[in-house]
Structures are given as structure tokens and as C-alpha cells.
Length: 285
Image (cartoon, rainbow, N blue to C red; front, side, top):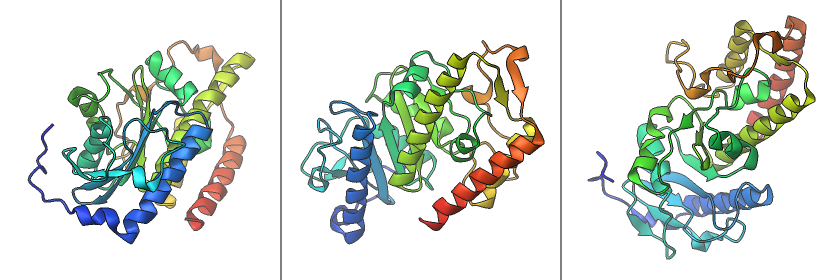
């Protein structure tokens, strides 16, 4: 799996710096959260962080994310060559590396198998959107990537077209991959995506009509992302909508008569609640 950055020299000593030790601890803490939330089982899932121009710290293969320690972690270059660590790196690291190469501003990625989001991946159906403010602000539209055998070059390449415009994707018949500026934030996005898929499923079971935001209200939520410097992968540099991902349409089984738009008063109440929670999260970074 070659890269235009393949000739870049690596610095293995980064693996032993104080910054690396802090990142290793954060990765292990995120791994335990994934296991405790039942987002991974066995030795499933993997986590990574780009610590240098050509250096990525990652979880190894064949170790439970609950049991993992900083000493178990390893480091690879952007071509997947292991340059530090005693445990063998996971073959699925290439999926993460494609994100880092396509979107250099991204620093961390988390892959896991949360049940409700993975169920969407099995039926190849992106979660419908425009129903919960927190989901729109933190995640937004989610593409479904085409299936390929995990760990292969074809599998890794599926994410590249979406790396700059999104921060989460469903892996067909497999699970999810989320990415962001920190390991903690990438793990947050996995939580938001899973909870959203679960909540919408429950809402459907209630049998009542689903209530959706209007296009104007969606723009208001995207404004919140910009206001608090949360990247919005649905917009281009000029602020225009620029997304044709699989999540760009509501579930085709939803009847038009079942769709109810929120009133402005209802929407403003939701926006205030989300704005307050986002500001609190940013202040506590």
C-alpha cells in the first residue's frame, strides 16, 4: 500500500516522548470506554493518533481494548510500516492512515462495532438525519462505505473520499469509523452516532410521525458548528452545502405524510440547549 509520502523519514523516538505517553494513556482510556459500552468485543476495534508528520501511534492486534496498556501500543509510518512497539500493529490501521493522508488536519481515529450503528451498516442504510440537534452539530450526515475485506488495501481506500467532509462513516457489514482532532473527540462521535441510531429506532417503534428540521433550521444548526469552531464537513470553504454522501436522503420507507417539521419555537428551544452544551464542552477542553 504505497503513498506519496512513502519516502518521508520517520522518527521512532517520538514514541517515547512525554506527548506520546499522554496520547497512549488517552488511547487506553478510550479503549476501556468502548469495551464498557459494548462497542467492541473480543479483540475488536482499533484506535490511532497521528503524533508526527509520518508517525501514528495505534493499538495492536489481538488484544482486548479493555485490557490494553500503554506498553502494548505501537507506532507506524503513513505506509503502515511498524517503527516502534513490541506488539504487532493491527492490519486495519490502513483504514486510519487513508484518513490521515486525505485530511492532514485529522489527528485521531476510532473504529468500533456499536450494535445499533452496525445494524445500519449491515442493511447499508445511513441513519436519517434532521431530527436531533446534538447529532447534527457533532456528526451530521454519515456515509455508508462500500464493503471490502477488512485489512485490505481496497477496504482502506473506501474512506478516503469522505475524510475531509465528514467525521464518521458506516463500514458496510462491519462497523463504524470516526475521526477528529483528538482521540477523545473521535470516541465521542462514535457515542453520538450509536446513541442516535438507537434513539431513532425507538422513536420508530412508538408508531407516531417523525418530526424533522426544516432546511432553514438545518442551516441554523450548521451555524452553531461554525460559531464554536466545530468543522462542518457538509460545507465547502465558502459555506455552501457540498455533500452527496449516502446519508443525504431520508430513509425511502418514510412516507411524506409521516414527516412533520418542527415549529420555530420548538427549534429555538433545541438550538439554545445544544449551544449551551457545546459551549460547556469547549470550555472544558
